[in-house]
Image (cartoon, rainbow, N blue to C red):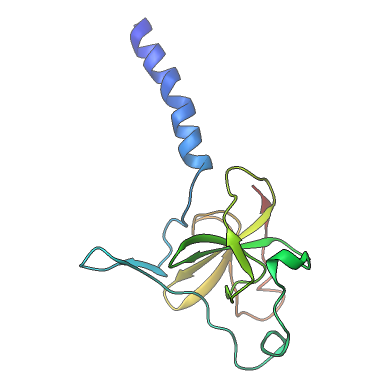
Length: 142
């Protein structure tokens, strides 16, 4: 009986560690594994019109980020970006699991790009392209 209890207690930190180190969004349809084993990743397209298309992007090293970091899965892995479009210069390698900051997770469900509170499509997610107030994301320090 003691042996089973010890095994169960030893498994708890391993499970907590695995959860804390999630480096992908569960259910994200933007990431596809191809038949040859290669991974194909989509990122949200920059709108052709509107304010975001006219403004110069906030470079991650410039410290101009006013809100949460956008966690975007790219071809080179999970990145922290100042915007969901992951334009050049706006991203850095992920510090998830080692640094606590406010984050939003970018994921795709069908043809809809979502802002999610946690790295799981079953968490609070809103359509990035919906009209306010329906597109107001809920970030979390994680």
